[in-house]
Image 1: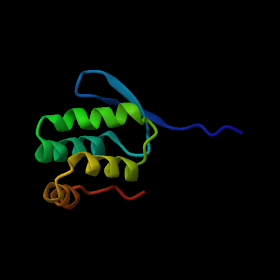
Image 2 (image 1 turned 30 degrees about the horizontal axis):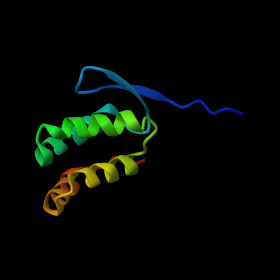
Image 3 (image 1 turned 180 degrees about the vertical axis):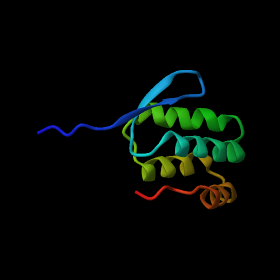
Length: 89
C-alpha cells in the first residue's frame, strides 16, 4: 500500500520552483528566510535554497537544525532560535 505524500511548490530566490513535502507551509519557509537574512545577510537566501533543493523531504526539525549549523556564530544562533517560531505539528 502506497501512501500519497502531499507536496507543495516553494519559489526559490533564483526564481526556480522547488517541490517540497508539505510538512510545513511556505509561510514558515519565508519566515526562516527573513530570519536568516538578519543573521547571515544576503547569503541566507542561498543557504535556505540549497538546503531545500538538496533535501526536498526535509522535516521542520531537520530544516531548523541545518539552518543553525549554517549560521555557525553562537550569538546569531541564539537570536535565530529566539525569533524563529516553529509551527506545532
